[in-house]
Length: 312
Ligand code: NAD
Ligand code: UDP
Image: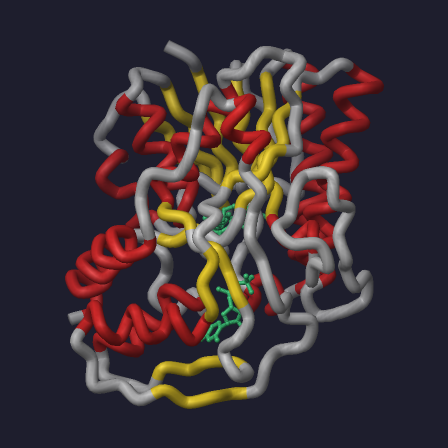
């Protein structure tokens, strides 16, 4: 049994990670300020004596004797991270400094939930870890993209300068149960709109692409990354290479929900990346043959079942 700290543990991905690590017999401390996460996401874990919930903001230092830290605290949906951009970048940068300081002090291994956004609007396709990215440093997405890039720098510097055991994973668009219905991300938006027979809002002409990964595949990849030997530090892409246009996604959701919704087109937000697909050869090689096992149709069905229960 290990004692594991998960920052952002009451969020969408964090709650699945808490659940899985408890199932595997670990003790889990879930730290969250509930900005975008909620107690609802982890309410079913609260009776477990090996689970501890702490209301705390990662921009302030935190101390606990733990062996592993998964650093997920940070709003992930563009609507939420753009709501208070200064707070977003503080969360990424000061959160990383505080958690790396903790890892250094207690000699814990620390994993950073980085993002495909470090590649920006990529000019190399698919994106492999060696690509440095194409990021606007002063746009509306910069608080998130540059915050996450700076966090990666801090992780690497704590590793080389202080020998902290680090792991960096670059997560590509992930979806599944416990996404917030008003989260604003494309999968939850389309499913909620389709189930309510409201217009499906496609930003731009819908030709931009994303590669969607089901949350269980991500959690498996993150845990395998944490278990690698100390010399594997990453960054490693974790995503599903199946690539779809946003229009294709809308059509899939409409078909799977039998919805009467019509498609409407709204303006494309500034700096919205036009294409995104992970090269996952490094993950396959270094994470013991890891690869996604859930295709988009299966994952969407599971996610639709979840939203049907909570909104209808
Ligand atoms: P989420 O918004 O559901 O979860 C983020 C959690 O962090 C929430 O519970 C929120 O309350 C908490 N949080 C935010 N600021 C905090 C702070 N200052 N102190 C303490 N807690 C704070 O989003 P998610 O999709 O679960 O994302 C989790 C992590 O994975 C994020 O770091 C995100 O950047 C990363 N990620 C997610 C995706 C994706 O597609 N979901 C893709 C790439 C990276
Ligand atoms: N998008 C859309 N309609 C929506 C929400 C998002 O067309 O209601 C588009 C958005 O412009 C982007 C893609 O879907 O091109 C993915 O958006 P999301 O916010 O889920 O993630 P990110 O842009 O961070 O990858």
